[in-house]
Image (cartoon, rainbow, N blue to C red; front, top):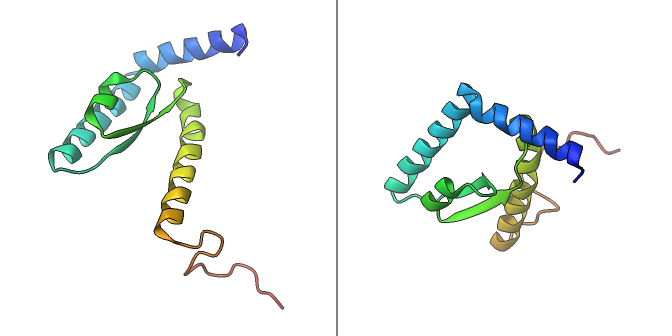
Length: 108
């Protein structure tokens, strides 16, 4: 990663940590995780590398690199799609022909 890119990401991370909305979302997420685990729920968390607070609360953690908050959904979707794919394969579902999928194109 170039120095310019690292500087950009660093500035964004500092602004995310200082943003009250971001902090509130993070605290609510921690609270929700604690509620689920208190009721013996199993949690698989997607967390930023180095986030030991979430890692200590959950059974399994998928770590993604640090990035600005606006880019996180792009980084989160890839491991979630892979998780869904592998769960479907283990369950014996045909991932190439999902059932109950309505046809969007009529074949003649």
